[in-house]
Length: 114
Image 1 (cartoon, rainbow, N blue to C red):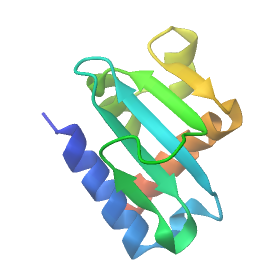
Image 2 (cartoon, one colour; image 1 turned 135 degrees about the horizontal axis):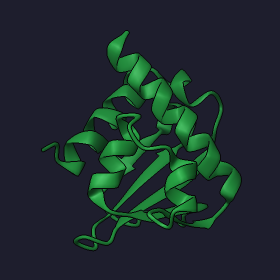
Image 3 (cartoon, rainbow, N blue to C red; image 1 turned 90 degrees about the vertical axis):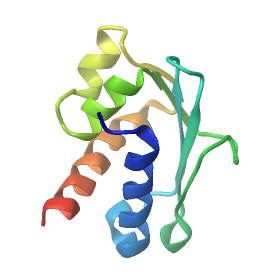
Image 4 (spheres, rainbow, N blue to C red; image 1 turned 60 degrees about the horizontal axis):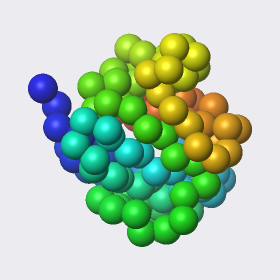
């Protein structure tokens, strides 16, 4: 099974290789995994975008879920809206940013496959 750290490392690499993937989106996403309490942040700030393995900045959108659901979401096998509606995903903060995340993950997958 894929490790969460590996996924974030790949996302970070894609952000560094092609900052245009975020299409001018400036935001701090925080991912909290209730399986083990770990926290990762996806900090989107153009060419200064990065991944943190802790709460480094104040998040605008926090997503709380299991690691398995996160993996399925990044792979495109779990719809974020459906996960939220079914209670598998909890969102704190800016819901608009949460909705943009699905498109962002799709652009990361496209960059990986293209």
